[in-house]
Amino acid sequence: MAQSTETTDWVSRFADEVIEESERRAPGKPVVVASGLSPSGPIHLGNLREVMTPHLVADEIRRRGHEVRHLISWDDYDRYRKVPNGVEGPTRAGPSTSASR
Image 1 (cartoon, rainbow, N blue to C red):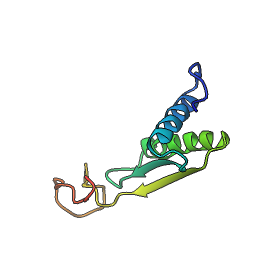
Image 2 (cartoon, helix red, strand yellow):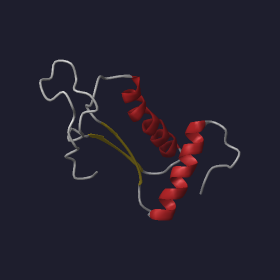
Image 3 (cartoon, helix red, strand yellow):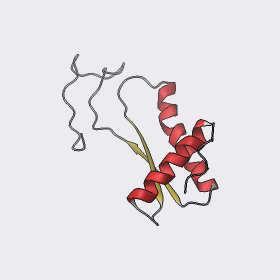
Image 4 (cartoon, rainbow, N blue to C red):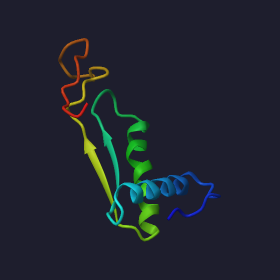
């Protein structure tokens, strides 16, 4: 069950929502938190955020006694938003080749 409706910090609020949705979708199963990166463009602080936000939420869920799996993926099939410096290739990105998109 969710911790509290009066929780104010964002990690706890997200943990409440994830636990509630996980129990609705797959009762009794581990909570799965997923994040992923794509090598498109230069590395920036947003890349760290994409992994750290789910990591902090997974830690909070685990702290509450739930079994958690944090899946981290690296999607190297995503099309480039911009061709990175030092990579020879087309000046314009083509369509994504990922089967999941």
